[in-house]
Amino acid sequence: MRYALLLLQLSLCVSLSDAFFPWFPSYRCHEDSTCTTTKKREQVSGDAPSTEDAVAVPRRARTRAFPIRQRTSITSHRNPDSDSIAREVNRLIAKYTGRQPEDTLPSGQGLEKRQNAYRVIKPAATTHTNSVGIYQDGSDFSYFLQAGFGSEGKKMFMLIDTGAATSWVMSSNCTSEACDLHASFGPDDSNTYEADPSGFSVRYGSGSVQGTKATDSVAIADMVLDRFHFGVVNQTSSDFNHFPFDGILGLSLANGHTDNFLKTVLEADVLDKGLFCVFLSRSGDGPNTGEISFGSCNPDKYTGDFSYTDVGSNNGDWAIPLDGITYGGQRAGDEQRLAYIDTGTSYVFGPKADVKAFHGNIPGSSSDDGTTWKVPCNSNKTVAYTFSGVSYNISSRDWLSRPDNDGSCTSNIYGHEVVRGAWLLGDLFLKNVYAAFDVDEKRIGTC
Image (cartoon, rainbow, N blue to C red):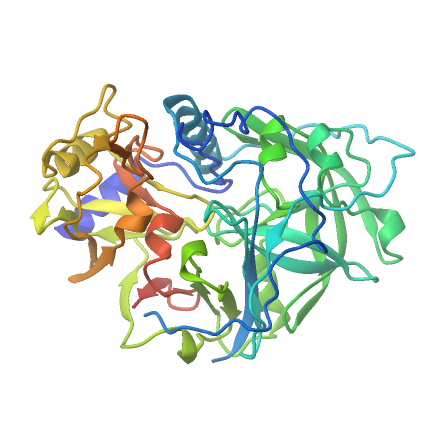
């Protein structure tokens, strides 16, 4: 019965083939207007913390791994507002709906080479096979790795996005303001670059990217893909002014506008197993030890045993059945739901009725619109999500904002159905587990 309900639910849902969901809650934007004002950051070579003294901390096993970096974005570590949340929701909806390629777009000429203008927090060095550290932006808002493109190995920061199938980087021909703040890639950067004039366009709610395509080598950790077909973006919306990454690495198994990265890796036969594992580091926990590993999990990053849940769809999305969400042991809602596990989303989004029921278990909670909820800042009972009978606690550091001017806190669990009848669990959830995305067995393991 449980799976019959899930299959019915899936028939109502759209694919998450382009799921990047930039969501700016008001508390992150309004105090310093950084969501609307572009500010250049220091170069990557600037005063970002060194990784040499970072120590790995087990959270929740070894083969090929990549460090994931988190960069300091234009937004500060503030609290979200309703406008920014609405913008984030719109982007996520578009990401999970997918878009068809558009006509070929003209490319600019005579543009200077660009470098990334954001400060990023570097990850600790990795020793696990086929692993790279995850960079971060200093506010736990976006997580990305560094990939080498072309014959010269041009370094590009790419958002790790399990909700997206299309992979792209900013083109050296890009004429948009956002591209002036980022590193770019084009034919002058590689003597193996093969241009593809076919165009593509992806909408992310109010934001979008447009461009053409190319084929070239891409190196991540110990892996080198000699011929990977990806997007090169000539135009971006201003939304990308606020993010440090230079492109998106699609890690879903759905069909996108470009080669599917995971399918290309499996066809290249460079891994012992079709698997990747993600450890996201919380900026407030000290050294950045975030890491993504391909082919196996890093045993130094977790303790205990994995609990696996089979993927509940056959369209390539990383979506699994959710048993429930609780606050202080009190369950919210009775229906079985599907939960999309998305590294490209910062927060958690769910059906309004479920989110209302969840916050209804918190004394003193309130909402004007059913989307954003205010709660007492001392709401410290355990929040937990349950999969396959195993519950995972969520730290209040992640689901509660800092105190607002009125002394209350904003809940980072928002009432909005990005996918009909389903939950979307982003980095807020993933910072509290070690996650294994098993391509071979079509399942997700957590511990």
